Length: 107
Image (cartoon, rainbow, N blue to C red):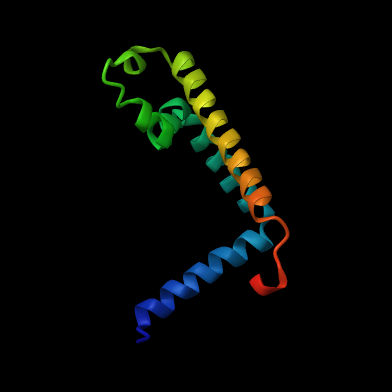
């Protein structure tokens, strides 16, 4: 269902997009504002909160990981991620050797 408010909202959105195309200074201004915002984000905290590996390592019953400094935790995360990638590559290699070339019946 189309409402007058929806039409105006869409029109305003199209106008803003058009302004970015026709006025490069506006695009540069918005880009600089976005970069400033990115510079203010606490990236260490962000990655710690977004990392699945971080969440798993935080369940360490001895709490050694939780008491470690950022650099130590980061090194641990990287090792775990590297092991994960190595295992995935090895698993893919085993799968290729086990299956071999696919016979015509598989296709």
